[in-house]
Length: 547
Image (tube, rainbow, N blue to C red; front, side):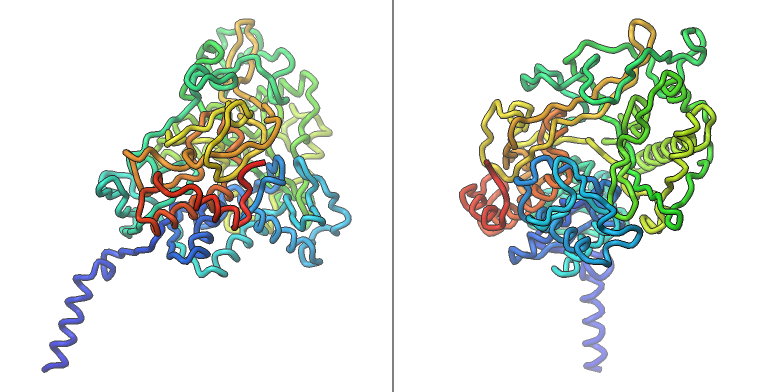
């Protein structure tokens, strides 16, 4: 009888336990996201002696770093330290062995990087890599540190999805019914969903120059700092020169507004395709469902006008592959088709991502097959294809769309072009950036003369690397005391154009985790930690904070 009573008591305890059926999980720090910043944040928490759980809507870790962006936007590599540098060191170790070279010999690869050599033997770092190699490095980080990751877990963005108490996040739920409780939270997503659901204010779109006393924000019609514009007069109408015939696809009828004014538009997204030229590792470009060659008529007219730069951004990565990025007036960037993405529902985002995929797959099929494309271009494009050994569960297509910009927090402080260009000093540095203020086109419109043009493409180079303030990764204290945001940082549109690079996200993820741990130890809000102690630890962890 006593044994039966004990069993009954045990069962009652289990039923009453939140974790038994409600699936409640708890750790010192909860990281939401599967990006490179999420991984470095989680690793740093473990190294600091605290517990961590990673709640990732993604199945694959690394975001763009493992999603096709293998031709790293390094900027000045000397300011990349900490776990970010460890990542690139591990990539180096992989390619420093014969096993790293399957489809070509190491000596056949060359050593071209972006702003640096690809493989730096002196520093033992490699900045250019295949997607699966990057993903394996992130998985190794996770395994070595025994980090628990809940994959394919999507934040419940509805009412009650995030529970707050006394200005702090207490827990959040996912759509599967799980609840995650923590002392500190880190939003390491490209979209900033946890930040938004927690009631933290943010901005979407381009601010007017007048907001932060900037020069390169807002609308920038007629400013061409890359070669992503129509250099020759191209008609945007279905019947060339006839406005009554209507506009071709992907050209807005909206009139261009005054330069420097703000708007809701965001820079274009694309997929960073990894392509292979090896016959045994190549999937030919297939015609996507719903393919319409008429959607690429603008490109046909660009070729007709003599454009010859098709392959200028087929940047080489190891093993006869590329990181293929947008280039030219009509390319992989799906200009103007992403404006509602940042605040969209999961269902709408999925639709937008699919639209981008169909557009880009259709573009590649058009380039390889349409008679409107010059024969030499068609022949050369056909030498490429999706790689059989990348993104194997997705037919060689990247898992991650390039969310160049979505929500941007309005935090304790705001990084603007004045800080990134060295016009204003930065206090309380938690990392450094150095890449150009790089914004892709935001719209394609009809000029007053009746020809088509793109707008929004900016590339302004800082004279020197710059520091990124701690205040830009934490919200205002009145909005949330235990949240850090290392990806959707508090920055103006144009400043974010530089900060948004993958090495910087790794850096800020690590720094955010260090701050979270110190806030726990000090029993204070993230806004009130002792920066002197934070700086000391960041430097100890080999982060670069200032020149």
